[in-house]
Length: 494
Image 1 (spheres, one colour):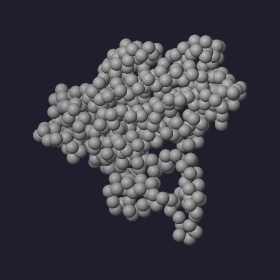
Image 2 (cartoon, helix red, strand yellow; image 1 turned 90 degrees about the horizontal axis):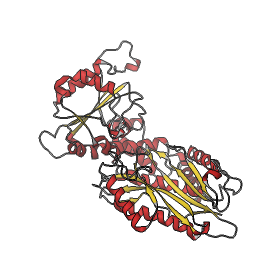
Image 3 (cartoon, one colour; image 1 turned 90 degrees about the vertical axis):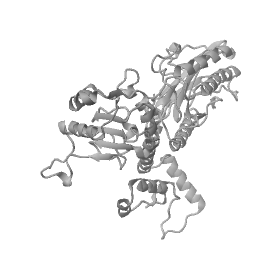
Image 4 (cartoon, helix red, strand yellow; image 1 turned 30 degrees about the vertical axis):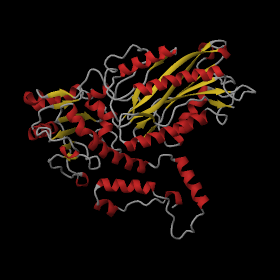
C-alpha cells in the first residue's frame, strides 16, 4: 500500500460496536490525520512526505469518495437536528409528510437523505413529527421524530418502518418492503398514532422547491387518510424552501474551499499556460474546463461558457466560437459540484497587447463599476428583507452612482439556482413577483450575479460589459461575507 493511501480505517468489528455517527466521525478523523507510514518502511524525509501529499491533493483536492460521504453523513444528522425543529414551529406544522417515488423525487430529497442514497426507493414516505408542539415545549432536536415508511434509515438518521409481510425464499433473509396499499395504510396508522394538529404537504404555485408533492401521490394519500385527516392538510410554504437553503458552519468552510478551487482553475484557464493568442478558440477553453473538472474527480451542474469582447468588433462579427486575439476581454461562467454543493462563478481577463503590462484604465474602470454593484449587493442582502426589496435598493444606489447595469443574483447551495428569494432576473429589473417576495434568512448562500456596462475611452467609447458572479455566505449571525473573495483586478494573459 502506498504511503498516501495508508489512512487508518476502522475495522469491521469496530463499525459494528459503536453508534453510526461515531463511525462517521472516525472516518473523517482518519481523512484528516497525517499519512501513516508502514512500520517496516524507513521514515521518509519531510520533503518526500510533502511531495506525496501535494500529489494526492492535486489529484483529489476534496478527498476520496468515501471520505466525502462520511463528511456528508455527519452534516445530514447535524442539519436535521439544527434546522428542522425551529422550522416546524416557524411554519406551524407538527406533522410534515414528504412522499415521493423512485426517479420522481421531491426537491427536498437531497436535504434529508444520506450520500449513499441516489433515488427514492420504490415509494418512500418521510415524516417529521414534532411531539413537543402540543405542550408548547421549546423546539429541540429531541422533540422531532423522523420516520421513514419505505427506504432505509439513511445511516441511522431515520427510523425505518418495514413490512410485516412474510416473504418466501427471501433474498439474504431480507424483510419485505412496504408496497402499494400497505404503505398508505402504514401512513394512516402513523397519523392516527400521532394525531397531529397540522399536516404539512409540499404544494406551492410559486417555488418549485415547495411543490414536490405530485398529483398522483396527493391523490393516493388523500384517499388513504380520508376527510378527517386531509382537512388538516396545510401547504408547507417556506418550510422546504428554508430547509434546503440552510447551511451549517462546517459546510461554509467546505464551500470556501470549493470557491478557492474555482479561482485557481479560472486563473489557470485565463493564462498563457492555456491560451495561445491567435490559435486558441473559446470552445477550447470550455472543453478545457470540462476536462479539468473530470480529471479532478469533480462535477459541474451546467455547461461552462467563455466569451470575447473586442475593440471595434460586434458580437455578431465575432461569431459563436472566435479565436482569441491580443487585446481581447475574456469572460467565463463556470461552476463545480462537490458533496451535493454547487458553485457559480464569472471571471474576466484581458489579453495583453505587445508592450503592455496592464489592462487599459478604461477596462479597469469598467470592472470597478461592477465591483461597486457587488458592494451594494453585499450591503443590501440581509435576513428579513425580500429579494425585491434588496433589488430596489441596489438599483437605486446604482442610479445615484451613474452605473449602467443589471442585477440578477440567486441563492445557491444544494442546487445551482438555489432555494430562496431571487434578487432580480436579467429581464425582470422591476422585481420578480412571487419568487422575489420571499424573505432572506440567516445561514444561507447567494451567488451575486450582475453586469455593469461602461464606455471605454481607449476603445473609442465602445461599451464594455463586465459580468461578474461570486458566491457569498450569510452567516448565522446575519452578516454577509464572500465565500472566498471577489475579483477586483482583471486576470492578465501575457
